[in-house]
Image (cartoon, rainbow, N blue to C red; front, side, top):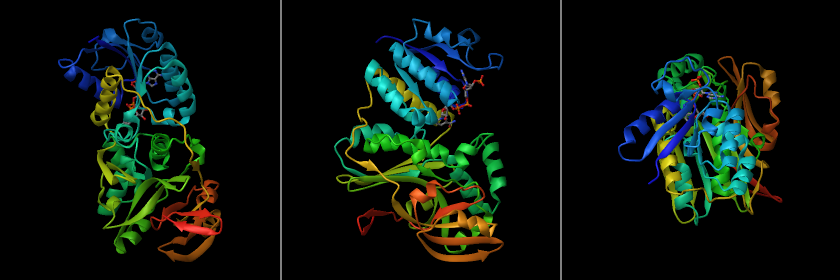
Length: 400
Ligand SMILES: NC(=O)c1ccc[n+]([C@@H]2O[C@H](COP(=O)([O-])OP(=O)(O)OC[C@H]3O[C@@H](n4cnc5c(N)ncnc54)[C@H](OP(=O)(O)O)[C@@H]3O)[C@@H](O)[C@H]2O)c1
């Protein structure tokens, strides 16, 4: 077997994790690092100095390199790297969910034109092998629902708030100290990180290329300890859920905190863990559970893609669907804010209740995802009060 000579971009959390795994696996596979490109050449690294560079050309002009691994934290720059590799016919592996979600359509066109392998298992829930599972086991099944907890940082924060009754800011600081949350936690706490994953899963499970700005996602930035304890007193807790649901030929998706009860699967998923469940006609409901991020868990997903490329693997699910994406579906939510006026930001189709508790104002009711998409959520907490989604079909409202 020809030796795989890796040209890697990025040597941070995931890049270093992969480096450890490649170093460990060299005895089993003909695989070696040729060059690693980073931003700051002066930082001390565990990789040998002679293979480090800060010039991308050193990788693209090295004819020995036969696989590019993209592990940087800048989506636009990552797209430049990935598209250059695809155009040059060099197989490429990435874990960059934001880049893949935003540039999905362009990447698909490039792959179709240049026939270059591109794999990205590490981009969706770290070590959980969801993309390969969908590829290998669900090609001929009829999926009706994909849902789960796709973000470890927010799950860790929610667990801390629930168990230790500490405010959001302290729980976030703890998550940052433990390395789960980044210095700028926006992507996690505003639900963007799970939204990118959901977008990729919409493509891999339903063949839909939905623009990222068409997917409603809200996070836990505005969750108060009052929200947590109010729920806890009723035997409930919040989990940041991501879900895709198909009904007949329509598909909807959202990322939103949800109130779950002890008998719900999501209730039992604590700390930084993730899960993905897939519901399909022949298989019923199946569950994947585990570490959705981290240096070695994501590193091994990237390593599996490298071995996948060696074995001639490519994704076969294409954007070719008789399904349509819709936000004209209805969900039941509660909203809370310290300023009563902010509750007017949400246009309810049906309002159920308005109440006040410990200085917070609450409103519950039924709302369409479409109207939530245009809602300003600054200073407003939004949570699903149940797991129902109503699809509109003519006059009839169907419950899934
Ligand atoms: N962390 C996780 O658990 C996890 C899980 C799944 C997916 N991912 C994804 O994996 C990717 C990497 O994440 P990470 O956590 O490893 O990031 P990170 O720790 O912040 O490291 C980023 C690396 O990229 C390098 N870099 C940034 N811009 C560059 C450029 N223009 N050219 C070359 N190198 C550049 C940085 O160089 P310097 O070292 O010189 O600053 C650094 O080594 C991201 O797309 C992330 O979303 C991460």
